[in-house]
Image 1 (cartoon, rainbow, N blue to C red):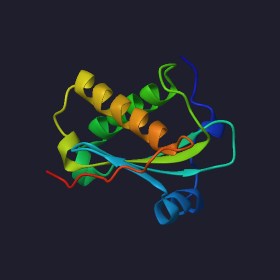
Image 2: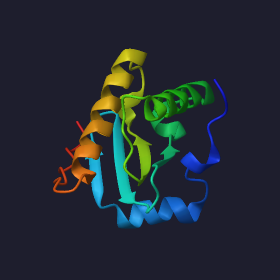
Image 3: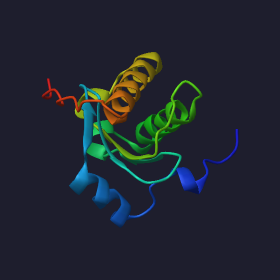
Image 4: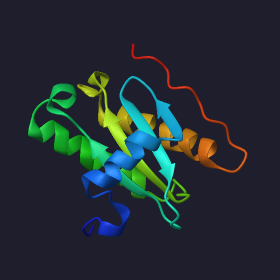
Length: 128
């Protein structure tokens, strides 16, 4: 497994702010909130906000980030030229790896559907 290529990452504050301010697609559940905007590229880019408050110590935060990156780059998800920011919620603490994978795959799938031509934006459910 090689390094995650820079062209698939959101790297600076300007890129993150663009997604936060102009998020045209939103999906969420108890564990994550995903915000996205079209980026004009053939591939999607991802950025993560994993705070100490929602995800605990550095080991937990890094584990969550690795899992998000792995799901994002897996072949089961087709990317459609979006800039995506994944924000963790307090429900992410203590969730096992398979549940995280299911949550992320479901959200990426719903995000894809909403971002496809003719797709509809789904309302983000309130935090439980």
